[in-house]
Image 1 (cartoon, rainbow, N blue to C red):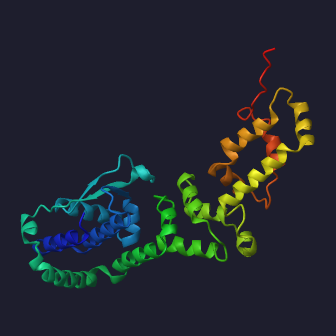
Image 2 (tube, rainbow, N blue to C red):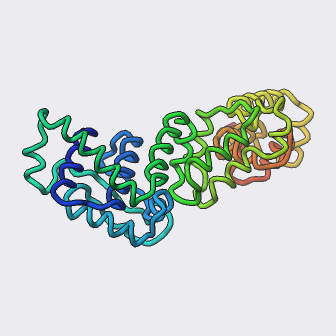
Image 3 (cartoon, rainbow, N blue to C red):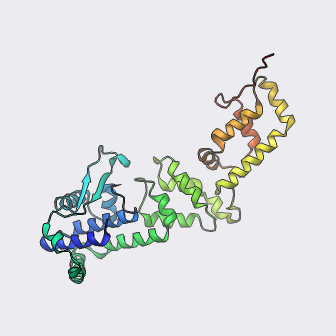
Length: 311
């Protein structure tokens, strides 16, 4: 995939048959999107998102993409259903060859300067109709993505139920002000969480107002998965040596291997990202692991029974 080559072919095609402002804006929007995704062969995107970003109607989006496909500049596959999830998004790809043979024949090193001039003149003419803010939105959005790659890795996991990248980034920065964020674990968590909730709701759960008001306690088990795991590990090591607790629990669970049951609950759930997220959604400041372990003994899926002697 050659980024410059695609731009040259687009404008050469436009010289033979004017493409129009809306289709032009959509083409370059998709081009920048594909570039930000490291030139995936196919990528999904919703008509609704394009409509919002370019400030045009859904019908205009549909007409524009059909026109680009007819000209051989892009290809797309309609979604299988009309849901707002990832399955309801159009699958796009860029064609490396245009249907216009003259485009292929004329794109050579000798026309580089003239193509550049053509790009400038055509863009200036198009902006008079399209409104500069539409294309500036695309440019500014990509600049923000390049400056904030970690948040983009989180943001792109939501196909819907989110605002523009610029608005969500602004909200995110206000929430984490004064907080040290472990982006590596936050990105992992964003890939596993329920995408039926809004991105902003998810962020509100992770970074509540009381946490923002107390930045000195920001680096804790709620913001750092490693700290959470270490806290769990310390609690488990402590409970193993708490003979009084083990004996008291054994009275009510006679055939249960108390330590192995607790260990199983840790390995299978509490030491996972899912377990961490559940604890973080609670309003507690400190985790009562002893209570957690005690409650886990009653869960059938945690239970590990003592092995019977063969004597």
